Image (tube, rainbow over all chains, first blue to last red; front, side, top):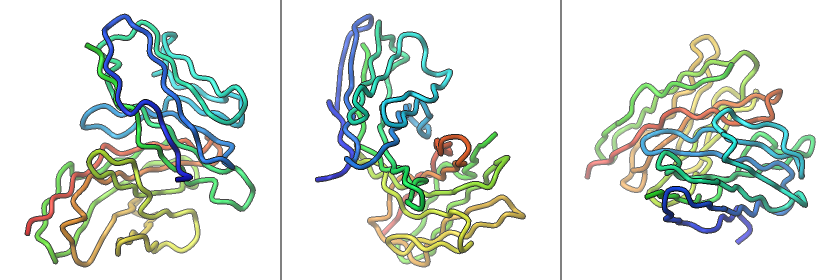
Length: 117
Length: 114
């Protein structure tokens, strides 16, 4: 399967613990996005990487959240000192950036569902 | 600024009847528009997209959408619903100048009755 993969698919943690999620984009895609989806809502943008550079962060991404893409391939999203309000589905998406390519289209992974108790 | 309004949170149709899911958008620039579908416990799947080419866009599984700039709409239609179409549908807007990040609507849950 050459789609976007995310790990883990589910995570249950206690309030105050740290969690880290991983996203592996489609291999030739330079652009990588993180979104958060809460129950009954559409996904909301969190952050964007072009290769290894983090070019934009939403105000939703508080200082407890950090994302990295160290070699321009996989990415990690870490949440420190989790709160119950962090419970959500965290989605990763990737897209190509080549001129003339379908750079507008984002391909989504299955998501990581986080439950903070 | 970009935003999307999906006018119906729930739509219920009978199998074999037409489907209409409504979407209005707001964008300061020429937008790209998408419809994605999300089946339970599955990832978001692209149905179709508009990127300033033909205004009537055909997608997978018999869905299509028409971009109407004057009405700022991008409604999704299908002539005949199938049970397997039951899912949640998201309308999305993006613009190139803003890293193509997606602005999602709140979703429309489609129920298909036998």
